[in-house]
Length: 144
Picture 1 (cartoon, rainbow, N blue to C red):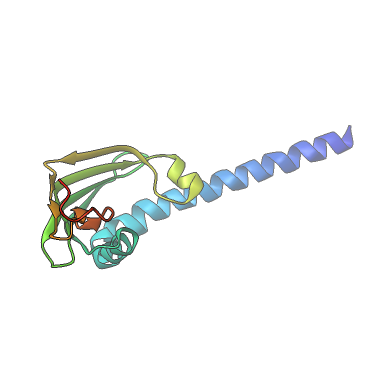
Picture 2 (picture 1 turned 90 degrees about the vertical axis):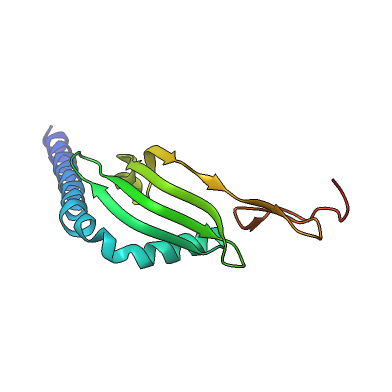
């Protein structure tokens, strides 16, 4: 009986500690990270460019942090091709983070809204198809 009470107490305090850590993470997100998100725009652009393999430019970042989980507004997002032309233009992107993001420590979206997207699709003289500046395989020269 004494062992069972001790195990229940340990489980209770582990649960309370986990809740406290999640709460501190939430407070840090809302009070430290999100108010300065515009300062990290260059880092976000570099990370997105590395993941896509094409240069990414973001015109502006705003955060709506009125709820438990914040939402991000991106304005004038552009993906450039190898020649520096705009291959993908996203005038407005709204992304609401999922609560699972706190548990997994990686961004997951509950809602993603892309408004007014413009996509550039090109085929070069060698038959290679590029969508948004990204190469999608070698086509056959002279093929339709």
